[in-house]
Image 1 (tube, rainbow, N blue to C red):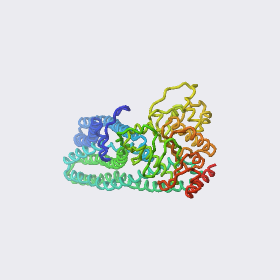
Image 2: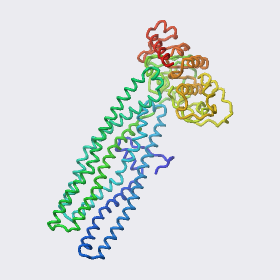
Image 3: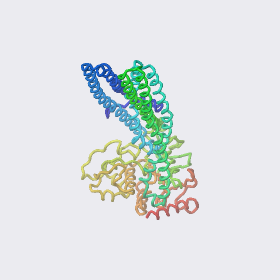
Image 4: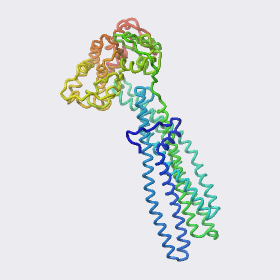
Length: 590
């Protein structure tokens, strides 16, 4: 089985079937052993009716106690050996499935790490969660076909050969009947793939909504949007439930036919064999063996139906994994150096120009518009944005990450001591993951915090957070700071970005979860702490806009007006209406 530190290999991303076959090829010895053991196990199941027929025809019917005892002993030994094989088959196939499970987890997690900051921009949270929670297990289960699936084919051919020695007519009926049964189930498996694909997609959408709801419930309450969001969630969950019923309906038919049709076929063949025995064409022992052979065939056919069902679901899951693995991180083709001195950041698509050394605020009715501008200025999406007179795409990416920091108000916070969370890693570039890039030096519990951390906490009005924790800066922080309130998390994220002291700080909605009093303090301190350095914030809060050197009003993602906060209030009615709406929302949240 794959080791935790072993290279999982390069997955085949050409499609779902190719990915499943790659998982098999990664463990050829174990896969071949599983197929061999399963084949011998199923063939020996067919040996039971053969030995029983011999015991009847050569021992019981003639009254030969010696032969009856010998054949009975052989029957016992074969049964005992087959029981041991069954245990080994299960162990081997468990290892095959676990290897596929761990290998898929490693390639998915490894690719998520390679995507880095581009992950949240290329795939939704619901998609990633659905892959990790459900798809990995489904893919691993699909590899059952390697063992029992191959064994079912071998056993089917062996039993058909044995039946030829008993009655060619029965052998012909069995050889033709079993493929017909599998063929009848086939269309349901095709329908299952389509229904399962749609179900998985809707499941990803609903999971993303749950994540959004968990993270923004307070804001939704304040803005009166909880009911609207609840209605959307209820609608999506009902659609998912209905699709789940469709998947369940198809699955029930597959499983019912997989068990019912072979049993019905067993009754037909038994009736045919009984007529042949009554006519004297076959012996009583051969009649018993025919019944046993067909009863044994029910297992392989049921296995094949089950394998078809698992493969259908496995291919759907594998396609989702392949789609995720096909996402590419932002390509770095930059060969030029960044401007040696502070320079203008320009986004031609929106018309935004960020002058160096100033606090600039981007205000827009749609937060997505301002966030897209910030993504382009930080080079998280391809664009024609420039720094100075150099296109951002032509500058070496490490230089951009070292000097331009994107501070998202929902950036990840990894579990650890608060001191470690706030300790920047030079050159990490993205405050969402900076403290995880390298572990800071361990400091004693009574050590005074460095000056830059103290200043950052003061600027973000976060000193009270440290004071309220039992061990101060050495207090543990949960993943994404779940043990802190929404406003505390936002201030800690802002303090972490300020502690990095980047040349250019791009902060997305840095005060959206704060009360008016705290927000006013942060706005005042932020301008003073970042004086002489380039700072850009996206906000519609008048408390922050009033402290900005320049305010850029965006309408539909384009610059509509530029000026000071007061100047825009006096001359831009649309801007005044936007700020007034935000003021009403703040009063509702109090």
